[in-house]
Length: 373
Image (cartoon, rainbow, N blue to C red):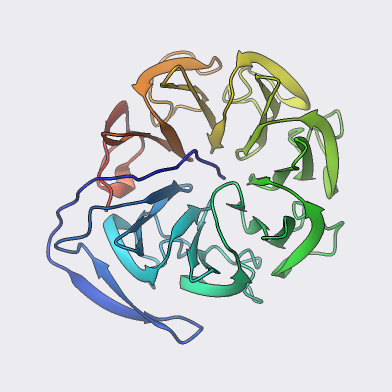
């Protein structure tokens, strides 16, 4: 969701114990050899993205994964968590983590694994998927602005600029005007340059900066009804212009005229107030970028990470009042946000704050080194 500002090369080294290899046959019939705890994994990670409790990265030209695996989101052929980086064996050039899904661009084809109980991977069915599988969607490039995975649904921007959607549609989060869940990617015939999927709602941003929303409005998160409650089953223009957008579980964010706007749920201080907003509201905080996941929000300002929202596992990277954007003091060039964790990337490496308990670490609000594959 689950958006992060990740560019450039992420470089780190990891030395792990003896390999335990196994093989998984995808529904397409292709074989992957997975290597867990590889003795000498390559230390040239070029992409990192994180979902609720898992991360994926590109290293040595293949997809590596780590963390929770309750829905097969690690793409390793089973539902067992991994506390160390595991090579999935899929050759790819970029990866994106959804809430409980993972996506990879391999040979100009979109591959996906993870939560699919409502057709959210666009594979034509709603069966369990534990290994990366070809969606047969062709893309020339992929990043977290063009592919976004929410709670059992996916948005993507095709090369022609059209937004395609698949999966859960009970609250109208696909913006298709009803009709139930979709098991295949469906063209909305709406153009966009960015998409952001939340828990059961989402946003798209067009080339002119206009922000559109659809889906569940139970906390006011579409900003279209002027109140809390209801649904918006068809994509509609919110009336605001933005340069950046982000979605978290029940909250939305936009950067408009240099200010951070928020809409939706604020019970953890994530709207920079202890309030739900049914309209897009200027928080009074100046920013030019925004990253969100779970019930927390982040921005880079003055070369350091600022944060607000839920902090039960230290995922804000600081202590103190959670309803105010506060400087963590942690330097960063990019932010990668998971639901209960946040990563800071600089030229010297990657640091983690929050709950790393399923990645061989422990919960802490202190930023500490995080080793990439």
